[in-house]
Image (cartoon, rainbow, N blue to C red; front, side, top):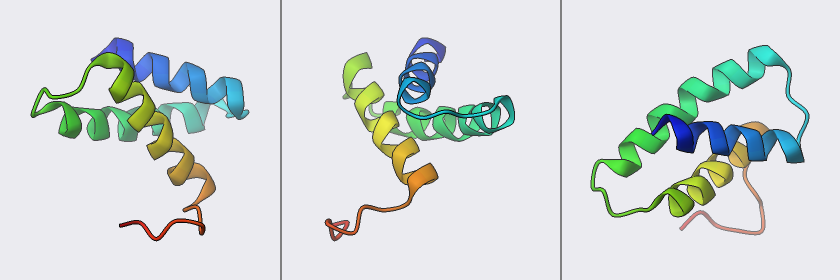
Length: 70
């Protein structure tokens, strides 16, 4: 699980510059989000990484207005 969270944060940091405080705050949120997704154990590490990146993008950049959220 920690490997997935680290991979998500590393990939997101490659796309966006984040300071250390923001990374740690994001680590807690993304770990909780991934834990919820992983309860059903229906996702592999790659899928969890993609969902985690989408979650961080929405968290830090806001919702994409092109999509309704359905």
